[in-house]
Image 1 (cartoon, rainbow, N blue to C red):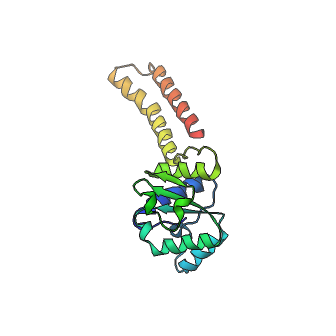
Image 2: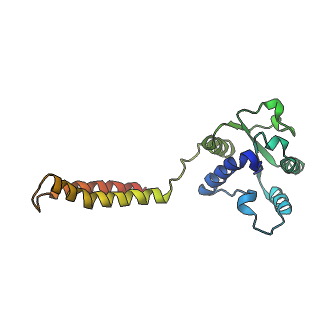
Length: 184
């Protein structure tokens, strides 16, 4: 994937994360080149071995000599090129003959990932996977509600000890619902 870090880095990062989460190989300089590696050579090698070349067209990309070199290499090697054009760029501004390639137009990080996925794989994009920490948070919240809420309610309602089993039952039901969400 080719882009300018100046204004396309966040888009590229989102595409990288989404495609990797959906078991697709993606190469970006930031994520795949180690410290001390010859970055220019590594990029050239990865363009040569790629099946699809995605170029994220932003204002800085249009002025980038590095992106131009990468696009020209992909063209020489007859790679399938998919331009992803940011919404405020006009087609007559798109250089390197990329305005003749079928691509996508986007205006947000979420839109670029779903549109690229659908264009490349010809099927609906999977929903982004939720962060596992998000589910653990809900699980812990359920446990807290199950344990602490009956105690607080029994004190505030002046329920005698042993008379708040129904409150514990509600806490258990809430916990089960959250566990089911975590498993899914």
